[in-house]
Length: 304
Image (cartoon, rainbow, N blue to C red; front, side):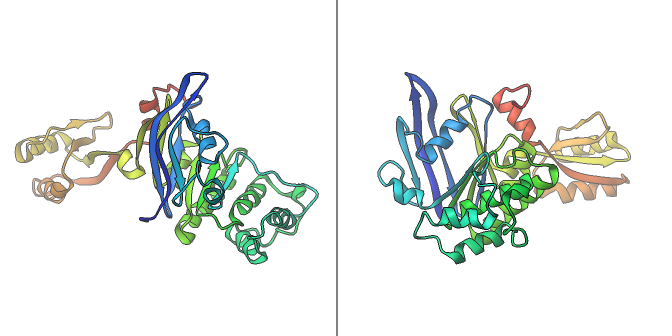
């Protein structure tokens, strides 16, 4: 995962002398799934428009597979497939005919590439049905196939699960994860469904007021560094942490013992608890949810 696919370097965007995007930078590597989150008005859509060349940055550079969008737009875009909200499909045609029509606009799209895209999105059994009888989830799969027939290195998905039921969302999530893992495609996904981003993405980039306020792996961003113990005598456990390990701790509303520790000493702590006669029912790492993090760094009271 060392190959750099997308490099956004110090881009800014001003509209009518108002700075909308303020010197943001982030990267996406081969086979990585990056969640791009932000409240309404944060600059998320403006950034996505710049990534696909629909808007030009006022400053900074964007490159895809080493090609500058500003200086080498055609070569840069040759590596990109995208779904912006919902796919445009002809209802009176089959899913396959829709793919053939789009593919005919490019000399590089072969029949084999179309067939491969159909297989990747799991539509082999229904691909020759008319689009008008497709469910929303099936239409989204065809839209994803449209984005894949050019065999892109970078897939940009803007609100791809809008209108899908829970089953459709789950299926779409598994397809995206499989694409990244099995084919090495890099995926940038913008979504308001924060819980889905947490399940789907390797990394998350949060934008607020035109600035990147968080960028990192989901695991690192959600880890609090705290361990929770469920003991039969948590007060005695608290005393052991203080006297034996010089660790401050607290008891939560469920009478569970919580402390921030170096994980290297966790086996020793657990062994000390047991030797002291404590019953160790459960031990687990305390993590935040992505929604908690999102609300805290964007100062949002609700998801918008």
